[in-house]
Image 1 (tube, helix red, strand yellow):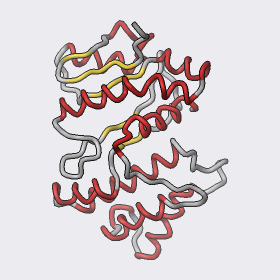
Image 2 (tube, helix red, strand yellow):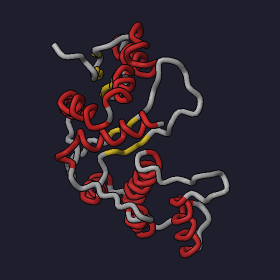
Image 3 (tube, helix red, strand yellow):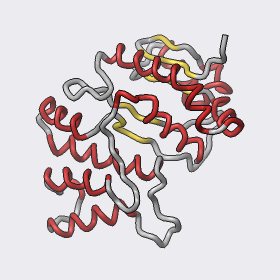
Image 4 (cartoon, one colour):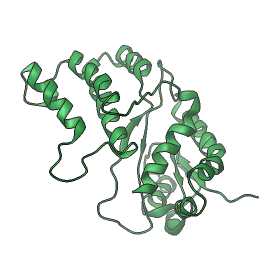
Length: 225
C-alpha cells in the first residue's frame, strides 16, 4: 500500500486525532480531534507534514503527481458532506487553504479564502444570496490573496506599495470614497477583473474540472513559504 498523504475530517469523523501532531501538524491534529469530541467543524482535509519534506526531495511535478488522486478524492468527500460542488454556479463549494506545522511558527503564510470563486460562480452566488456587494468583495479578496500567496505578486521590500492595494486605492479615489466597504458593486466587480490582469501576470479561475491543479498551486505556495 502506498503512503497516505491526505487525511479527511468532517461530520464528526476524522482519519486523524490529537496524537498525530507530527503527521498532521498542530492545526490538522486539532481539527481531527474536534471532530471526534463533537465540536462542529466544516469538513476538509489535511496534507501531511512529511509531504512537505518530500516536496523538497522530489520537486513540485512529482508531488502533484503523488497527491492528485488523494486530493481529488478528498475534495469529492468534502463535496458530499457539504452537499455542494466545487465550481458549480448554482451550489458552489468554497474552501480555504491554510498552512500549518508540527510546532507553532510565528509569521506563517496567510490563509487563502474563497477558493472556488470565478466569474460564473460569482454570478450564481449573487442569485443565491441576493447580496452582490458581499459576493464581489469576497471575489476581490480571493483574487488578491491568490495573487499574493500563490503567484508572489507582493512588494519586494517594505518601501514598495502593495500592487493590489495600489489598484484598490486608485478605484476608491475615482469613486470618491475612503473605506473599502463603501465601494460600489460595480467597482468591486471591476476590481476583480483589474487585479486578475495586473502586471505581467494573468489569473483565470474558469476551469474547475481540474480541482487538484488549483489546490496543488496553493500547496506549492505554502511549501515555498
